[in-house]
Length: 361
Length: 213
Image 1 (cartoon, chains in turn blue, yellow):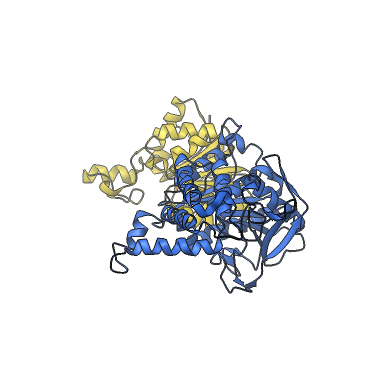
Image 2 (tube, chains in turn orange, brown):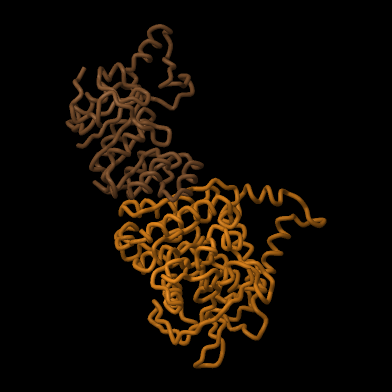
């Protein structure tokens, strides 16, 4: 499957902060065919540093999509049956408008003058894309980690536009521990003198800070067990542990494909996301929800621990919502949602098929 | 011994009960549940019964199962199953959320059977409980003649690795219902694939009760 990222431009989007971003670009890809009744569309929601290229081989770069194991002909999100869409999030740096894009009023990149964004803003822009594609109601929205937050937000914000929601390894709100790790990443970036208050475009980017932020991130994505298995105490060169070299490599790789200001904006959006905000309980957030849910967590995920998924499930069950929940055994930590393909394929395939059947009946 | 009420009979007495998915209690349960009902199956295993009810009776099917591998199988079948133990799972649910709450061959395994039954009646309009009858003559004889924890076709486990932690009979269950002022809507007694009415406390291998509060 050869794929190509497309861009659509909208006139403007009104943001939660009260400002309007105009114009706004959205980068997206689609796989499979939209059927005649337009009822087989699934929106995939990427995690923090992901992008629109979720599946297939990119026409230009030859790179595989970040969830290619789950999306494609005969796979969990079966593109022989379903029309699958994935778009880069608002505030990102992979084709959708973010801090690195040009502010038409100044002719310069926004940098830190980019308006602050929220998870609901990201979802609002996705809704504009889905409307643009002529889809009234999605069969499903699905995503892991930050994608799970968006999957929940979709069900809450647009109850009539989504038949099923699949939040994987996610949460309805960040814990102080999750905020703390994000803050370390942000401080690493801002402590890099090359960051220059976010005004580094066309100059040297804050590569060291961003790389350190990514290294911290990678630690939280793994587990004690997976790190012991992957690295042990092996030395790579004379005096460098395997794990040190791995983290440095990942950090340096990341700098080439990610924008430091996007890192700041997106982590803030994650930290501020709270479905219970302004409501008496999480259960109250799901008051008007009409979707079915498949919630998946992983036993060794300590960044987004199973209890956070369970909180979501309990709140939904308290409203008598239709929810399936499975805590999958794993040693891979938060990365598990990208690793455990066969288990998730079984769950997703069965869940989507019954959702599709129910819609038809 | 209580007389079996006429409404307890599903058809003719001593009739063969068809098996459903290899189980006669499933056949009884599927006959009780009406189309499009809201059904919760506690300890639903791989979701066989719920998948059957969803397909053939268009019920709104939900399940609860503690074993992860079975949860995966059930969700793969398209059944909405909650990975949890039964007591925790019931506590989340609002009152009268279901038409039927089913507990098939699991009451004898639960730590607090009375609490579970009360919760089931809170959550469901009607409760279907199926359990192996510890009063069956084969169990009585096994205990009498061996002087050991009975091991029979109904209770095949050794005492040290049995999932069963409560042992009760048809009469025990009926007296609990009376004590709690609940109502038995239907009672069906099975001996193999045969429905019986005579001396159920002695001859029933499996009892299926339809109860409401």
